[in-house]
Length: 385
Ligand code: GLA
Image (cartoon, rainbow, N blue to C red; front, top):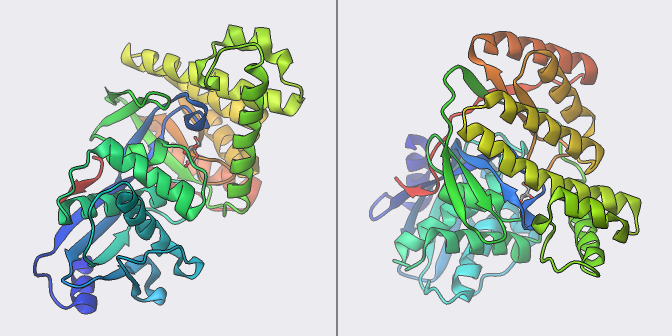
């Protein structure tokens, strides 16, 4: 924050009338590729994320600066003329949020100066973009005294990413960044947006994120392909079933009707969506009854399903999960969209050092890449500091 304050002063004069904000990244414990299928997810907010210092201006100018993209300098535009511009790169996220708020009827009619700093490892799949969106949303809410609740902010942030930036993501990342709660995960029904906080009290275990440090190359196009395969499956199932999403199905109903899905690959994608949704609800029940081992087993099954049926893991994530299983993890799985990014593991506390050393070594031996490890600290959602 001190550095960010200095940066703000250097770029925008002084700190008078500024407000400070934070929105976190997220890690999903289970329930992957279920959000856009009307299923359940179980993410938690991290203590890392994006910080912002912001001030309303007397004119219409919008000035955005990120300490993470210093080489791009201050991005300048006008509040009455906000448009997508590829060359503005990262700044399209905050601009998109402002556009969606305005389109939804919230009055933002003066310019702003905002300086950002994010401490989420780059490209790790821990939702730095959602945290940038949510920190912008809360800053605009406070600066312009908007009468908007968190869930509406989350919806508009997702809309910004879908319609302005052009990434067809579900609602999980924005929801976790907006509504996260310290030491809790959120069981979210992505169909109704009903949610419930579950305390994550691990007495003898640690949650560890491991970063493959693999660049996520074609991730966006493959992500969109999975989404449309699920849509195809849903349409074919709707020929006989009165359902709104794959998340409406039990495993038994799916097995009885899967023949309606003509393409075998599409059938596998739908199977994952259905089974993963059921698994997520079961996993949270296990956690609530203190059955960490049971929760861990379902995490492992989730990884296998993402590997075999959804096919979004890849060599690096598989190498990490397998190494974790061999090194005594109670549960370990890829988290986020896949194709690189991170795994999340539950590890007995007394074994953490050994785990980090041995998983790191095994991973290096099988991929030639160095993994990074972070012990998870579950933090709060978007807030004014
Ligand atoms: C990305 C998307 C989320 C979700 C996950 C997969 O993180 O942004 O909406 O679909 O992938 O579970």
